[in-house]
Amino acid sequence: MNIDTPLALLGNLTPRTFMQRYWQRKPLVIRQAIPDFKPSLSMAEIKQLARRDEVESRLIWRDGDSWKMKNGPFNRLPAARGDNWTLLAQSVDLHDDATAELMHRFRFISDARLDDAMISIASDGGGVGPHFDSYDVFLLQAHGQRRWRISSQKDLALTPGLPLKILENFRAEHEYTLNPGDMLYLPPHIAHDGVAIGDCMTISIGFRAPSLATLAQGMLDAASDQIMAGLDDGRSAQASGVLPGPSLRNTFHDAGAPATATPAYLPDALVTAACKAAQKIHFNETLATRFLGQWLTELSPQAYFEPSSPHIDLRSDTPPGRLQLDRCTRLMYRKRQLFINGEALALPASKALRELADARSLRLDPRRRNSLSHDEQAVLTGWLQEGWLHHIDD
Image 1: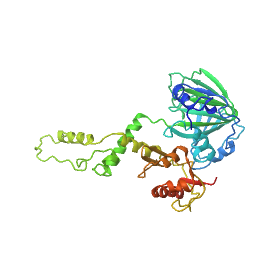
Image 2: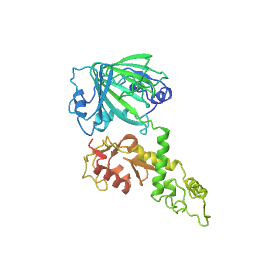
Image 3: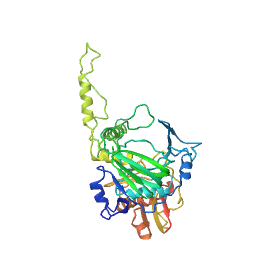
Image 4: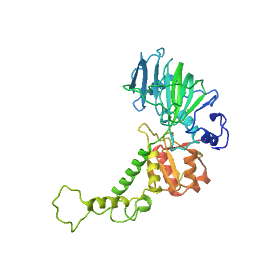
């Protein structure tokens, strides 16, 4: 993607300009971001998704002044003619190729931030109440109309005693009615309330926003895992981010310690040894890359793979066409490190594999196959057999 080419998706802004002016800064209404947009799934098909065990879904409705919520899967859903209900289907990109392709149109933002595509359908008056999100979101109107009221208010106190996070004192500052193809971008902590006008479908492209506490805990867990696995010795020090040396592998010893008349007192030597052991760990770029690469490519529990080319072996075959990552596959890299579906690969991130990660597709012809190393051919063949990768005839 050329980040300096204007996109209708961004109101004819370039991705570079959008990221500089709006991303995590201020809302943006984009009229006809996708002209004449038609959703790939009907409202009836979204209801069918919500009946499936592997699809995370929620039903939200109002009963007088009270908000109600129920988690799926659902055997029964409200009648289409009923008012004030909303059905949410999470991570539809894992279940529908066209929705995944729609989500990938937003890859001018790093895959490390891109999360999922949620689809909500609603009857007249349906919504989830005034609330705020802690992450960025693009709200694409797919069917019918939705009226959005938004506010940059600082008071984000929630109404107590509800199953939903509803703002207690919502004060709208702007109001917009979105038609199919229109889109609203909201940065984190912008209060908003969307209400369906008649039957309505909205597609939400959401982004990951891990807390700093989550990142710190992940680093600690990664260091702990590597130490417990014995990766703190000299052989694996560079890969693990842990200093070499035998001290972390040895047990605490205190030969010559005096007898004590205060046995409940925590020994100074043990406290000092614990501090010195922790100082042996380097929380560096290598450790962070490994933790983030595995965590951010970790598969959703709803991910499902079905091999479409189980008999292709790139070590001997060169079928014409291209290799295409499955919609559920997450492939990322940093420098020479390569990560796929929660795994860190020993295979370095070559130019071809980086191209596959960035484009999610790789042209395959005899010249390209011959340029791949034997290890690359073997790895790609394995991904084909797992269903992580598919061969597409052009």
